[in-house]
Image (cartoon, rainbow over all chains, first blue to last red; front, side, top):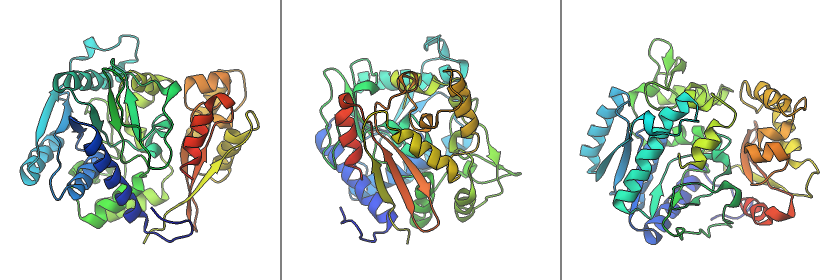
Length: 271
Length: 106
């Protein structure tokens, strides 16, 4: 907490707030798991969790595994599991044929993760799931609560979200449901990269430019595309983003198929 | 050191143009991402209006179809002196709790 008018370092403030949220989640929601897509955001989340709990995340990290991540992502995963001593759960995702057929095709590919997530929650009885989504990356995500309940079907009732005042979080899961916890909602893409730089955090090399292109947002290889860039270091990524007006998720095909695709995905339980 | 942004909430009576004001402000200051204005034009025309700036914030279909903000939204404004987080809050009395959830962030 700080008082109005105080000059507080932005990254210190964000870090403190996220650590507070993580500790609240661990204290109030058990069993608890964290989704780890191995991108910059969930990696930052994992970094914060290790800071919050004396070097070791006190919950398993879960990859919703479609088998379609980039090879660099799987390599990075194996290295980090080993180096950071993580409890890792590989949650296989059902095929696209099992997803809602009324969704557009790329959204159906993404919805595989919703099904994988529902399955692992049911299997492990998770009461809480921590996720690294941010308000500034997508307009529907910008409407999220930090502690966000999901009903027994995993659906997000976005028309009736619980009130959330200051640091008072509603951590009671609905009957048969669970609570999504979003410690990075207040972070921007630039905050994440500045934090990655400050902390000397490792990231998947796909974020750096090769032959004039880099990945700005990482998803499955069949529905994610690189954007033009010359940034080969974290410092250059920060300079690039400070000047850019291009949307972060421009390379994520699932966002652009129809006006309501992302809302429908999230209402059904997508991240 | 990066200074924490100023958090600013816009509250007021329903249908008085809070979201529209913020959406237009983002556009005038060049803070909307590339392609966003065209996208807003397309989804506005689909609903029989030329351009509805509030759709930059009102992303739910229910909000766009009924032209009312249901839940609070936060957007970032990067200015040379200091960043501002603009919080849009609903004005309809039915969504009072959502308004306070937004205001508590300012």
